[in-house]
Image (cartoon, rainbow, N blue to C red):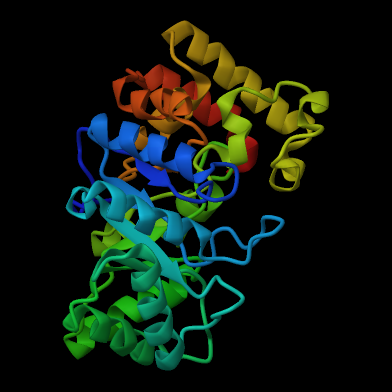
Length: 314
């Protein structure tokens, strides 16, 4: 998996914007972004749909808060900004009409005239690979988007899009965003999975759910710990002994290395040659463990032990 220079290599972390306007207030979001940039971070990942799932929200909140931040700080050029289309129930699908309307709406909320990395968030099988390639290439040619990314499309559809772009002399996608963590390995590491695709086409890889909705922070070490979490729905799949065994092994290794479990979990991803994991911080105090991932010295024995502990998730 190749680094396409879409990240600051000194801080290989993409800051997730899913908390902005959900569990993070606007003031908290500003503080998190300030701390992230001060630490040398640059890549911020959001979507037009964030956070439509939150009570009282309808989507667009994360982008709007980011736009307010850029306006207040005057630092848009300091951020490598990624956002997405086709995950918001208000603007679903990847037809040319919807994509064009959605990108304009995102640019307005973000208070910017360009997006560094624009993802197709979910597939739209009504659109051929050739049409998808044309639709997104037009955004690049118009200067609204600088790079194209793919998320939640099957490896087969992603390969077909890339081939169509290459054959048509159009902008080739530069990045993919798969679900990948110690608690979800098969999509990337499996045969004909996203890992092989990334290697074949020299794609940057930015995994989401890098901490498995918080499971890999070490906070959840018993079944009782899952009760009452603000991410209970996302964590429900991990309320079992297999997940607790994985967390136990992760916590044990993190104690040996004198690092937080989250740092070690992200370091494992970096050891698997991802470009940068995506992880979010509700408040600035949570950033330290995320940024520290690049300082963790994982030896082959540690990687092997983590591989073994997460074998049931392969």
